[in-house]
Length: 557
Image (cartoon, rainbow, N blue to C red):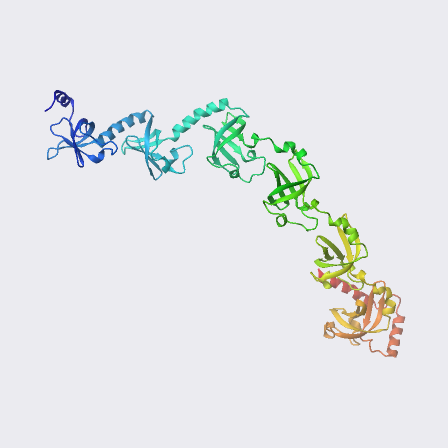
């Protein structure tokens, strides 16, 4: 039976599809809930529309939405879910129009953001979750926050939320407060927000400050990530504040004393120190002596003996080494170090070890157009000038006599310790044959030798005593010769007669055609030579020597 209260409610309640009315649960069975709304017949609400955590019980008063007032069977079709949605939507509309804030629970992660239950489902873009978008959105599922309604689509009944705008508004308030209270020298807490190549941005709970890489450590840093990581909590020093631009410069190294303040007392010139190689460059090696203090071992200070040493060939990054302090510049924060000063300079004893006149042996290390560098010991070379290779031969390039890697014996000619040079010579091992040329070769002597080189003007013949003679093309045959190569070959044995000995220019002229002259022919040849004016004899032969020298130089170049 209806009570008087029910009759009064029924008289004021409008029963029509689309309306929200109150009803009482009178029965719960299976998949349906039977609800009395005070109409002539009860209505059914599907069980799945209720929360599993708070299922309906008989006697509960609930709001329902009338979907169908009366079916063909006379039943009323109700919806509890639709009633809540409509009530919440109306509430959200009023809040949204006022730009209000609403609380909600994050229920799931979807493409591009999160779904938030604020009575109805709303969308929270990932860019609007926080000032710095979180890496893992799933970690937020189940959490409740306040959100600002930024967009409502009435037709589609879509809602877009933002938590970031609320956070930024709060940060803006805090930022103004921080800037008004903060002064240089303050030590404040912050969290590393972002890392770049030039430094790290620190969140000061409402205000971002820049911790530049140069203010992170007194020592060398290749990248800020070596010192800090995103999310790390730090105590930093306020270095500078620009209130107009809301910029704050921060420091980390300023929390400790600059190690260079006492540098001169710690690292005096001439002392031995220990350190670790932290960086290798083409011109030297940087060595960390203590945190924030580095010294440079220049390439020229790596070794007494190694030529043009490359730092990477001698030292390795991370290696612990000993060095000698050469100089300290506190203003420029530079310390010069030396490795070679740990050892004795081998050139200090070079004067005694390689005295002038002593004979030495070594390996031909390098050949140049002007001489040969002979390694006498590691780091010490002797140089043989091309003019000191032979008393007798015209040497245009050392390779004519010496090969790279060949063992060479020579005599020490000069030692220059200051310039670290030792001059040595090969020809000085023996006597100059031209000093006794009169006893070795006379005009008219018959000699034998091998053709060593052909030229357009004649042929060079290798003689005894390591000497050369030249047969001019006119002295090969009685007949006129156009091309010397048609008559002589390199390596060919020949017999010739000495027809000229020039002590001043050190030249020996030979004649093959005169080799077999009899006494009468030689007499006539001598008479012919005697009849020539002074300086006119064998002019062609002299020109041949000059031409030979030019051709040798050109071929060497």
